[in-house]
Length: 584
Image 1: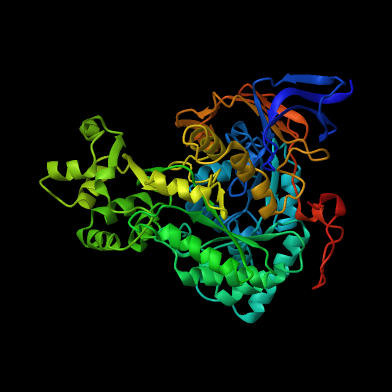
Image 2: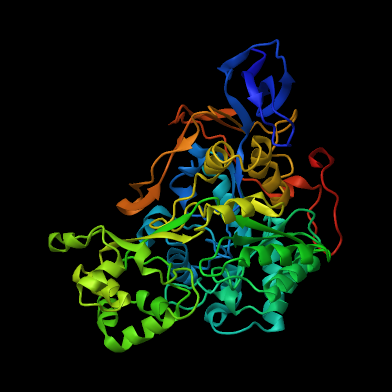
């Protein structure tokens, strides 16, 4: 055979905003080797007439650091056409990790990213300590997609400072030690710094994660250290994430970008924040102002209306930006029950809701989804306003807690449109030139968030149904755009010589199936998942991994290192040249 795969007669959307055209594509040895009329034959022939062919999608914000060790296919992301992901976002990861810090790291990651602790403990055999060792471990996995990793601030801080990382700012000597580890991580192939000042990010004790104790000067020190590396950027989750950012937040982000020599900073996430009408527009304006001064700032958006489930037995971190809720929900079960029933504690819990936060006080939008005790079945389907009235006109927060306590905290509540309530605003956000689709948070928040299928949502709803942008523009936003920001210089486009990460789908049928529960992670724990309709073929590095919704068993994914994209690893302030073959 002349080729490994030939895709024939598909409508090509190449990820470069080129107008759609019909063509064949030939693939050999993991690369796209011919585009046009292909005369030779392939060991596998794919009839793509009437189908759409695009580059694989790139998800630059996931938390699959642990999941990859028990699920190398990174399900269900790969089914949605995601062929490359970034891990170790928000400053959290599974490395660096000393033997004595292993318990704290696992508990922290479980709490802050909503991953069952049991799954992490049963699904991981942590044999590494350093970041280079962790990357080597990932490289040995049977991966069904490509994986790159950021360098996590909180882990480095804890590695250097121990418990003091959760208590205070660092000394200059401690910052120097952190930068030495950061350099080690970058020289091993990290794609830049990830960090968080988000007020909702707390560890298993309800204490702010270590990066939140870092000063501006500490962040700038990391940014300056990043400057010498030719590939890399910064991922940052700001302090006012869910209450609306301020101009000083963007001054900090802009300063970080400029200190890194103008490298890109992507922040998470640009949303229609409840109770803050128009704040999204100000955030975009502040980004534009900073970029005009030499920064390079982008925002990740969500094209979904963000619904959420919450159960006080497991809690996750939906309420961690409200201090008393964060403190109480981190307690052991019996202590948690006692605290939620305590009238004095309830005064504090109600006071917390007087301020801004991710979970806003719109009680009519919070309803009971499921209960564990038959005698509580009458609550199902009712919202907290209705239940509060039934209980004699009590405060909806009291009604919320009373219902949960009657069910030993096992009641499952549903919150409609936690954020992103206004479709007109969502449309304007996703259309902006500095706004990147994403926020899958894949691998995290398993009980209340399910946005793995963001590329399918963008294409099937916002393009096909709403005509918010062209298909060519949308595919570029899912492929080349994030590839350029992250530094995956050879991916994200259908062009000769590029790695063959390619999708074939039926655009007319493209949609997302209903969200459902799946008990498919270690320890029999459950998570929310959804799968696409109309995705016919997913090709990663020249091999078919999913065909007609079924995994083929092929695992051609790979660890991607930033060092793959330049000739020599910098060890001092000197810059180095990129490899000429990957310059775009």
